[in-house]
Length: 341
View 1 (tube, rainbow, N blue to C red):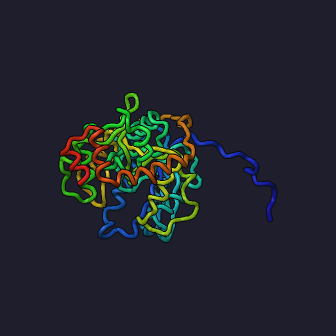
View 2 (spheres, one colour):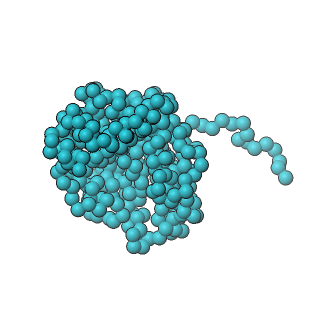
View 3 (cartoon, one colour):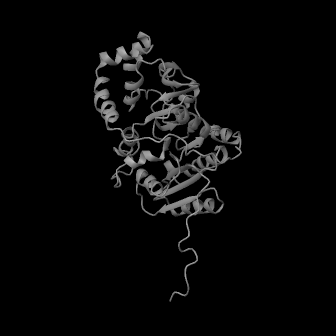
């Protein structure tokens, strides 16, 4: 029987000093073959977040059907305070559903969703925050610019800024970063035509790249109010990332952007010497209480979503119009040929 009252009854939950959470879905069903290096690569990811973040960031790891040996090692990291929240699912529920598990109780102002094979570089958090501050309508910002994202779910940016000199194709800030990403996804090299110029937008002294990929992105928390309420049917891929990560940003009238310089690395599934070199040279940042609550909140905008995703996407599907848009924005005839081929 119960004797007395529970001592925490009616007590309010203490507020965290963190305004930023990183969510890492992890799927390592075994430690052989394709997954032989997966846990070591994940540790580089996890510890590089801890080492380089500027604020008292919170980290959630969702083990999505990983093997018992991996879960045991995760428990050790949790006990060592390398992980703030550890969720273990015995069966594989998929990448997006894993993210949703952590999202449903996360109330931090910024939410970074990252694959488990991303190595974070110095000042990545500051670089991402600079973009959010410079662009109040930014809904998602990646610390890694990727080639050819200028027309990928960026219609709301083009419609608003097409006639502005703020939106322009500028020289790539870090060509080696673009090459490193290409190699991490299996390309042997990256031709010059992919890394000479890149679509950007500028505000004050901050330049951002148009569009972003999915493997590491920071979102404003309210974006996920527009995510589907039920789980996705896909373990990976399908239309899940589009519906749960892209569309919500657009429905909230948010811009999808990336930092101009490269502030993280996609490692892939095989350990390479450069990864240890980069990690060993990271500087441990002094943590501060950074209040991100002042970042402008996004509001649902049906008109911008309709114009950007329904109308603009049809317009750029017409090659002649697309070429004229690129010409107006400063590309040469040779560059236009490379961008539209």
